[in-house]
Image 1 (spheres, rainbow, N blue to C red):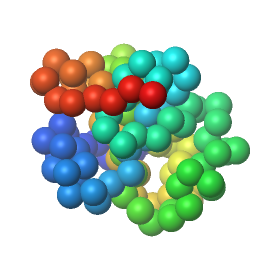
Image 2 (image 1 turned 45 degrees about the horizontal axis):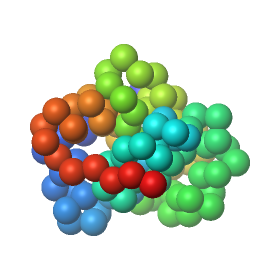
Image 3 (image 1 turned 90 degrees about the horizontal axis):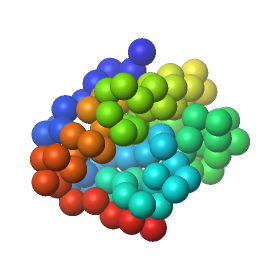
Length: 108
C-alpha cells in the first residue's frame, strides 16, 4: 500500500514542481477536470504507458482519483511500485477534496 500525502503537502509539492501528479481516472474524467499538470494513467494502462510517461523511477509521484471510495489511485500506485518506482504516494481524498477546498483544476 502506497504512503499517503495530504492536500497541503501535495499543494506545496505542485507549487515547488517537485512531484509528478498522476490522475488515475483517465478518459473523460481527466478531460473534464484534473489537478494542475496531472498526467492521465488509468489502472489498465500502467504497464504499457508508465515507462514513457514516467521515465524516472526515483522521481516523486502522487496518484489520485475521485475520492476515498475510488480504488484507482491505490491500484495505480501499487502497480507503479511493483514496476520498480521508488517514491510513490497516494492522495487518498482525491479531486473531490481538492475542488471542495477551492483549489484550481485544469481541463483538456
